[in-house]
Image (cartoon, rainbow, N blue to C red; front, side, top):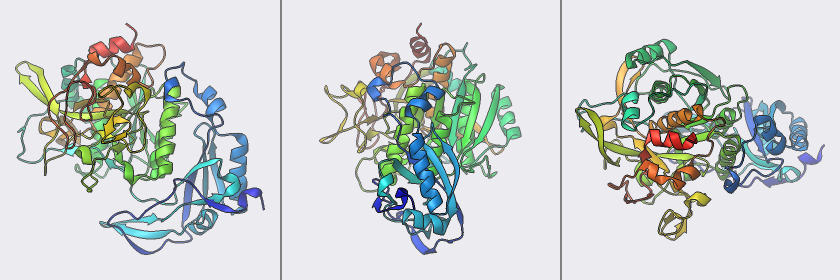
Length: 519
């Protein structure tokens, strides 16, 4: 027996609670073959946010400095051998060791009880309480993911209610980009835009037809499987296919010269973490920007997941990858029904460019932007833009003077404020896309993340090195955004300057690209 198999201790931050509304229905199948991802500490501490604008690291150099230590991987491998588990992969840069074995063997190895649960007709494998690891490994292991496969996140997409305001009004992605003054002469050429998906899919022939109807011909799209996730369209236009199609059509229409890399992962904590990490550390496709349109309120995550995913977004900053994340579609409550404000994660990580939602006011002849307000359809409506103050993450340095000379606050509690920026999210006059052969008008902050990702790809097209962590520059040059000062998202009201409804505002695309490209 190795030292890695001695006295056990609870892994800090790994505690799981029962999913609200779920009920246990019996023990898990002990013979079921499972995989888990063991997330390790970096060899050298990750750069602080204050250092995020220093010269970018190559992926190879990052692995040398901040990847997992060889001895930590060896100790986890020894632990696996002692417990009859297999080591399926070890990703040094991603600080991840993938172990597999039977549910029984993994339960014993990590001292957890696995059960089957059901909620709303969905069955999943779950656990309660913490994961346990050998005391000799507790300093090296930052998280263990995959024992519990409950559904973790939801897409941030909103559909226009039948008979709702807006009539038949809708806009193509190109029209929205034009309203925000995106440069017409840039197409994202030479860039890879990554899109993370946790469900659904698309059929290539239908996607090509949709692009043809929009009058564009994107360069190419590539599907990447993570943890067994795959492009699996249901054929139903009201499924998660709508999220996938919205992301791909928005990005592909605005920057058709870019390569679109669609990372499909399971909708679990493990799938989310590994999906983000796979995109950020992809040394083959090398995305310069990642768009994420999925999330969940901070209380829905384990602390180990919050820390691990936030760590991967620090990786992204060091590598020069911009991460654009939808800020949520349920206003300041973020679909947590306790009458208190909450924010969405991973948008609440300081490494994310958190993207909130607005409602457009338009001149129709010719089509132009008359103004904007906070997107909020009120009770019973399609939704409202998410935003507020994190209960987990401190305000980063660039938010030091957001509000009344200090960082964002929720009551007496300071924290990271979101969103950072915003864009059109109101489905009443929403984005016109094709989903499973049917035209739909969609909204939500899901559309805003790929919108901003496309703008970053345009800027990167003109740069020698990618923009990377974008927020510090935007807070320094806030006048290059359109400030949105009307409306509220529940607990918060828009006002001049940054606010927890629409952040700094919406893009003045051409001006921002000139700034970011150094012109």
